[in-house]
Image (cartoon, rainbow, N blue to C red; front, side, top):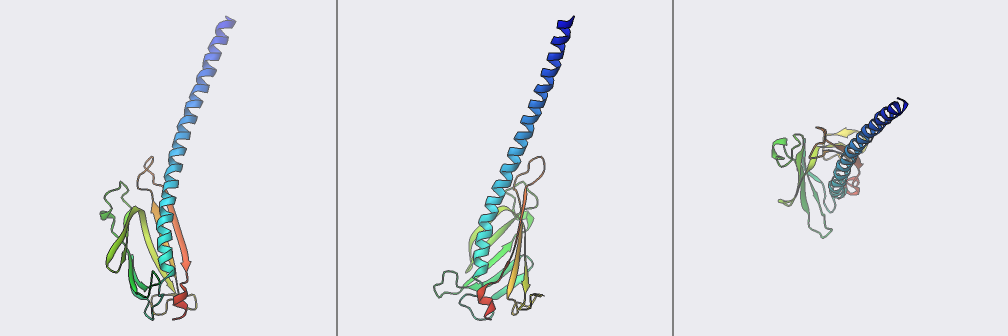
Length: 185
């Protein structure tokens, strides 16, 4: 009888260990996939952010006033000598509606466009969900007067283009940029 109890106890303990190991494997798989989505999103977002940041630092380079052509919600257009070659470029960033980003299953993502001199140079359909800009004057007060703008704060939000367990990885970036060329205007 003692052998049967030992055998039964061993089976129960072995079964519990097996269930725990299987749960561990499932959690590890979920964590690995979720972490991979986060990593891919961040790497992609950093590429977009670096391009936006590089362009924004050049606002007004080689240009007298006005440095900005237009700003309206998700659209900014400005003048800058991007290549430092004496040619003034017109740069426009704008965010599409959610209906245009149909290549991804994420219903919230949009396409960020970068247009230089009327030529669409980049379309980022990488999960951009928000693109916002605030302008600051010489007193660090927010302003809507683009002639008085001396600094800008760019905010972008991203979500992964595919979900895991119906959740999207998210990433946000915000930076205040003071283009040297705006200070001299």
